[in-house]
Length: 357
Image (cartoon, rainbow, N blue to C red; front, side, top):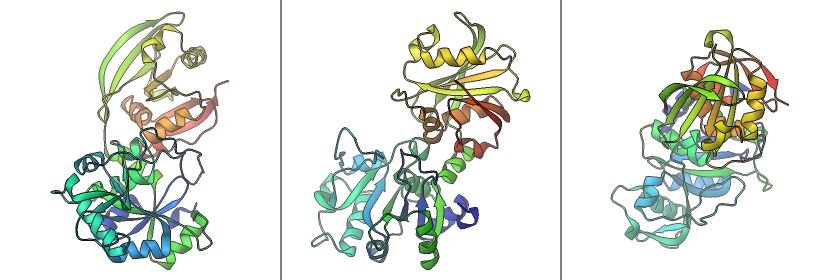
């Protein structure tokens, strides 16, 4: 992708504050876990029937209301499926309609009315009925630092613009019914004079401007069969989870340490040599005098080799711990060559990558 086609997050925030619409795209590298598509986005503070009509006419996708968890609970929304089996894990609730002030519910006016009722501070479950013609989506509490999706990104940007923490989003489809990708979205944006923003840039922006990791303890530990190390414990303010950094005895952030980030949900047993990822990683790192092993507690453990990438991309925990360790230059140790977007926001340089076999 050409950088010149994208607007900075600062520019997007200014556009949103001026009631403007924009296009939001996810990572161009076509990661399987995300949609790799573009959505039209307008803040709910600004939305009117003309915006809804524009989305229906030109974007052609499903018009959805993205909102935070607090708002969804306030109007009594429940997830459409308690077990989300969709590929992108988009959190749909049951569709809604304003109880009063609408006719069939499908017109641009009716949908704009439903959205305005749903986000109104005084509204509750009594003001909304289901099913309807507006499709709410619930953002993760940590926003793009928890899930790098269009739902979270649109809500995050509304928050950054100090507006209602919600937005109206709609996937952009081509005239032939196929999904619009980057090469389709650039001419679309120019035709309609719309800015394009990347979720990747929003992640970097938030990582650069927010701090949600705090070190709560630092002590010496002895790991059986490996020896003595320093153990630093960090707490994530977003969800209260604890994460760890095991550093070598002679650790120095000034001398480009080797860094490996792993994720697991079996923290209780990770230091007793029963975890294969931990075992293989320390077998490799213990050959060197200067390293940091960062252990991120994940909601669910998976053997997918892309898990480390997901943790950094979704949560930014690894990147913030690296920053807390004052590391500026590092040698990244991983199981496969990967591009770590979360590090860009901190100016952390990867001097080289070493593949752990």
